[in-house]
Length: 247
Image (cartoon, rainbow, N blue to C red; front, side, top):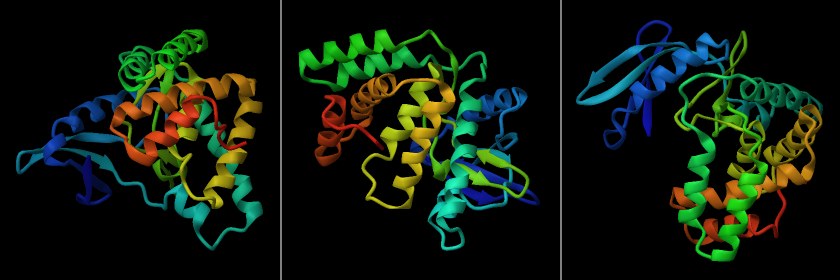
């Protein structure tokens, strides 16, 4: 949706692609409120317009993505496992924070289920499951939280790309993380997320059945984002309960 450029000393410009122009203003407003709530985000420094495209000026974060750290040759298995609690704690911190004015997640999911699941029986089952799982929580859900969107800065980890942010039940955000990366080939990230699931279930005091229920709902809802073919078939398999993730 955007391109990122250097923009003077210690700043970057996240410039909306032409077909997405205008998103920078939304993300800038969201980041202001998240920063005020104490969450680890890149500080916004206003918006600009370049060739008719809106852009968001941000403080530069120097450091690799967590994905690069996990996949890189510099860390051994023990060091990678040590990253799991920090990643899980960071997502839990975000989900435990409440920020006014964010889009409401549960109605969005309900609408996506109703438009993406063609089988009436499964659709009704998943809509009912969503209602049963909804605990009324309105914590911050990044909804695109994964190792590529966490930058390992020299002073702290920073979370980027907040365009999908919403307010909703915390477990939904964890389940979304699992769904987003469920089709990756088996590699170090797969093992990392398997440990993240185990760590997060223990930290949050939730049971596997609750998490698996959210995974089913979010797999079906993701089809509404335009997936087809093999990806849609996989997501429907998960939505139907035939495939558990990262167990």
